[in-house]
Image 1 (cartoon, one colour):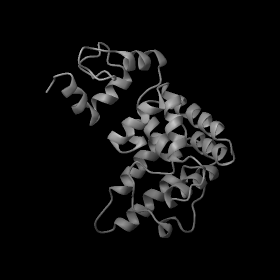
Image 2 (tube, helix red, strand yellow; image 1 turned 90 degrees about the vertical axis):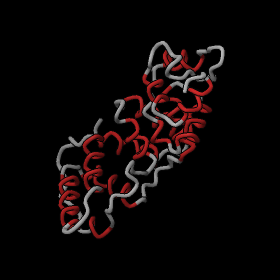
Image 3 (cartoon, helix red, strand yellow; image 1 turned 135 degrees about the vertical axis):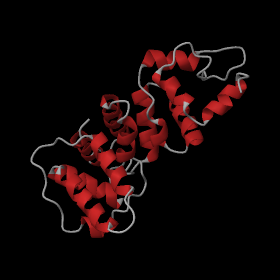
Length: 217
């Protein structure tokens, strides 16, 4: 998924006042994202970085960067670039960080650069508040909003749970599966088919609770 697509959705959400329209725009974007791109898209459209802080402030961004003519930068490339920038430390780190930021921004179009500026400065004003994004994630995944909220409470953030995928049949069958002692959501050991959603649960802190309910240690 291109960064340009996320920047376009961000503009759409920012200029849309209706809550349901915001949710649908966000959900549509999440459906189009790949499995590894969904958490990044959720974070960016929430105005956050998966890495939280990467050491880039106004001093690094001051002066601007020559934009690219064509949009080619993907979400994965931006995320990897930010991770590399955030990992820099030690002697000469300021210059190295500046060079990597310049390289990354140099691959972004003017519109994409504006989005990145807002993202890094924490000033991405687009109205995608947590409640709106929670509903968008639920709609994209075709699962009840209550399930996403419960998972978020256990995981701590939307970004960490949003890698769940969106097949209505697999999600619904999983949420409805029952055994004699399991909770409403099937754990990884009880589910006959490890759907993408099941794999997410398997990697979450919730699994310890679900496994105990199934008698598995």
